[in-house]
Image (cartoon, rainbow, N blue to C red):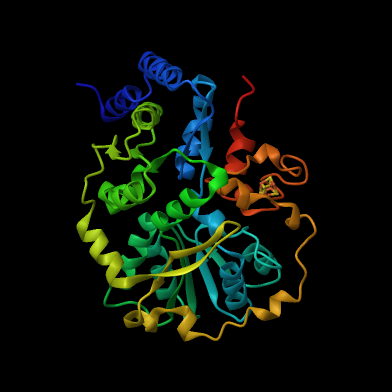
Length: 378
Ligand code: SF4
């Protein structure tokens, strides 16, 4: 009987089978030939998809006429500067900021949390919301959990907010974002010309695929939910291009081993008990109505924005760097440009010295393209 590690690797191979990948790529080419125009533009809205696409070199086997655009799929990248400023001010005012590692180097208006840390502020990296709770429990100091991420991560934040015995020195600064409204914004940008969306399987695990039906209906655009293995992505693209070809603005689920129409109802119920949506800016993209998740008034006792006076205006006198003004992260996340269109890419801006948020996070398109290479010159 094979041991567990053998079984796991065999399972992984099932989703990385080169002959099946080739067959799906051939099917995709056939569909694009039948459509007989270019470009056929589809967008994924997930940094994890971009990572897999770049890591496994999937663009090298896609038909030339298929333009697979990166969308606003990196929660760290779309965390707006004033949200980072709030965390920086709280850290400078003496709170300990607990946050996910990618958030440390995301630039605010004048500085990042890493800059504040270098100047003496206390910032700790945590790997889960639960770890922020333990950190607060172990000390007297005020601990602010600077919480970022899409609905998948917001669920974990909601779970701690619902605990009865939270330490009194813990509060939450929510920078959580809600993806479906941002897809609507992107669908409305005429220049992106998105003909279909490849939606993120992990977020849909929570929300269910049914959440995309109003978007498909309103903008007459197909949406296909896909997982993250190479064959998941290729199969998702085949289905999406089939729907584009047929002019069918339907939603289809190509990740049925994890995603259902309804999603995880318990997680949704917990998330909406704790959070409400509010409009707000996604960095570099636009104001997204209902795009931000903020704590409901019932959780004001946990809300750092209520518990503390946060005067971010004092940071605004510090001028942003001239380099930052050349960053085109917003255009990249709106599907209007690629990292290689940025004059700083790989020169003044690299993962060691990131100028914009897209070069910071492991889900940021610039960092992914820097690590694995981007669109091949076929
Ligand atoms: Fe911004 Fe750097 Fe990406 Fe250019 S390469 S868009 S400066 S993050």
